[in-house]
Length: 419
Image (tube, rainbow, N blue to C red; front, side):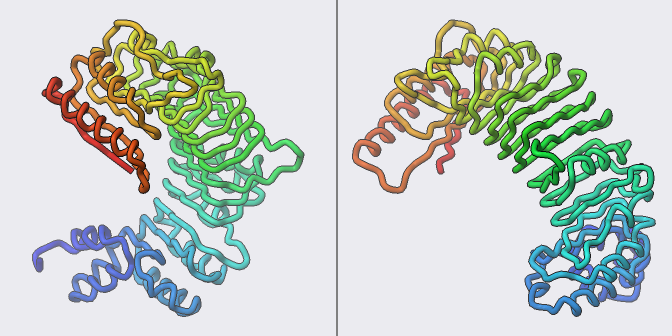
């Protein structure tokens, strides 16, 4: 260890990340203390890393963080996550950011201060590439002054910001590739809550827990779009057909439009969603390169709608991973076995139930016959704690049927996941 260059020791200490571990390790010897001061590039303060942080007074905690940060030079990644701690002094937090901003590439910031610290004003026009803000307020964005020329990833969680400022902030990041919005508090000046975002460089967008009347996203190069736990009346993606991965989880939306050019779609993942199948099918049917399709706990707007395997097999010939949840409503199986076409390229098949009945094992067997090159079968099931005799018999019959099936499909690797 004594032969290691001090720069290498700095890299080792940076991989520890947690400030407490770094300080303890740097006490090893003079060389390690030098590495901590001169060559440490990553440092993290989190109330979850060390519970004692919560027991310290705010003043004492500020002193510890200040001493640790000011002993370093050239920090590139700084994480300060103190959501369980009382409000810090704004002047102290500002001093931390002013001291590190010249070299900082990543900032993960979740600190309550009084008054609010203007992160954009302090860190704008510097070399930040990743900015992760939580429980903060952003007011009056000036894109010409508060500009982030190098920022590639922006994450806002529980942040208060107006629709206009959000659009201006994205505009102030000319190289942005990833945007994450988690439960933002969107301030609006009129009755209709409308958000319009535009970026030619965005490749990945994740939106969670947002409620809007209208959301228009203009992103020509967008490749990944994930909407989770959202309530939207109108959502429109305006792009040039670059979208490859589309995921919806527990979303309520009246009008959904992801564009006409979706030929490059490779993944479609829909769960806990009420779907108007003809419109949705029309939207994705041209995605002949689709490789992963997941329809899980999906409600159909029309009770008589059925998605048959023939449609899936003919429209998505390159499908390699198929996930379907078993659902029989009013005597209709939503994923029927009509037709005779095979899913030649499907290697992984995931099937599941929320309420099991005698037909489930027959449905599984029918799907196995349609996937001649299948390598892996995953069965997801929900098992209640209190089970009647009939439910126990149902599970026993299903187990027997699965054992018999696996004897016939010896090349398939079975997995069972119950909750």
